[in-house]
Length: 130
Image 1 (cartoon, rainbow, N blue to C red):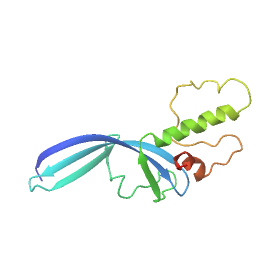
Image 2 (image 1 turned 180 degrees about the horizontal axis):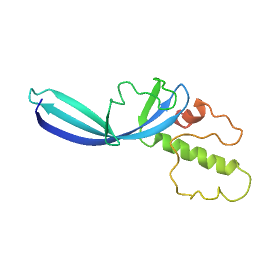
Image 3 (image 1 turned 90 degrees about the horizontal axis):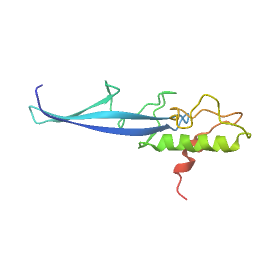
Image 4 (image 1 turned 60 degrees about the horizontal axis):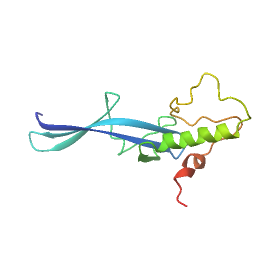
């Protein structure tokens, strides 16, 4: 199959598993191709590796579930930042955690803080319309 045309776009998506509540974000290089027979096809790459389309059958990287909500990039990191800020306000008075800079990016998962048990609704609450 010889290629006639190819264009590459960069897109990122945020994902939230409806089964376990895990949230993550992933950037993709999306290559749009047209072959010699004028048939269009798309190749998705994440971190330089070819991957299946995240839009067709997304899979949770935590539990393997297939009921995954796809959102625009930044949604998961925004919620994680809100939760992190909420934990700072609710924590006892004192300095923030030692050794963790204030501007360090938030991890890809929402980690439970203290005895609080996180539920899926905690992750999705900021997305609900009022």
